[in-house]
Length: 587
Image (cartoon, rainbow, N blue to C red):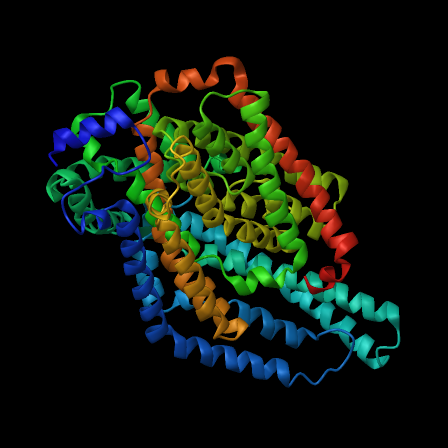
């Protein structure tokens, strides 16, 4: 297929799908679905292998030492001692990412740093600029260290008093527990100050060039096989996409903008749309706008972050919130849009409904592929989601803190209501660490629905499309099914299996703080950023304008999001305080 014919097809159909090829036995395998699976696992397997071979022995040795300290703790009372908590916290701080391979990935996959006034500080910090900041950070670290030492002394004093009373004095026991908790919080702030103090100079420019070259090479072969676009032509179009992605990360790293929840996804779409609707997207860039390939590869890598062991730890309330609430909101919103609002495009209705009910952009992308939605419909749905997510991640924690809501209930409500996983984590951190853990776990359970919903939508659309002919075959359903979901599920089960074969501290250090956080997630974030920029560059305001007419789509989102807020809170309360109250003690 020639490039001109490919562009004609893409512009004519404007669907989230790949051009169909015929005449070759293997042509059906030359699709973004299969290539995204191959690319994702070509990144996952090496990350697992190199972390295991380079960091496993050192991590397990450090963890064993901390375990021995905790096991040999001489104090036997109703609460853990200062020594026990010190070893426990230090064990949690062990990260495989601090080893050689982890450091290598962090350096070569680094994103722009936080900056306030000088945008160049996002890329490098010279000694002349670093040392004045270094003195300030050193002072903060020293103050935090002194305060932590004081709190530790108070905690030890309270602990000794309780121990001298043989733990029979309930007031002394409570005071000791409170003092130990205060010391641990102070120590956490000290560790944060230490990290800032130890960062003197940096230069991520070589790493950015490395990411650009690596990503260009990685995606060039699939693009050639799928589109017959030459690697050189693809790379020429990819470079502007990458540069706009870097600019998106840079704007998202600005401290004031970060405060308002304006992440790289928002800036990626905005920057792309500005270019597309002012000077226009040049034709030579279009070869780099491989939205489908970028997003599907990123979604498969997202599957690696869903660990079934963690999902099961929260118990039945988590599944009640995520697997009962989300489908109800999805189906009700779709019905409301179709029957009440009478939205003409069923694909737009479905993408918006999936977006607001499950996990935002990831669900929207997967559902768009399943129902063959138009690219501008996907762009519109993602845009709505990003606006509402930015508002909710700021307002919900404010409301929660104002009424002093229970931490677990707050976390469950956040996880079930806010769309994007990153926004859930940010909102949870504004409440408490406990709320953060619950919120992220709820969202993780909800993310599993991405594959299930995509499959159900594909089946529904196949049944509906063939309804007039009364011929519904398995082959046609399979052809419409977004097969990259199999990669998403495969990555989820692979990492869940590896996680289950390790003890919890080792799994946390090696997988959570190694392979995932400083491996697959770094690649995932970059690929998602490429896709958001590409979506923006293909966005046309004139095409989007019709979706605002009558306010139907906005009404749909407001209805669905309101239902999500009410239902998530109700199910969270029923789950943790009525049906399964024992689950609270396990969190």
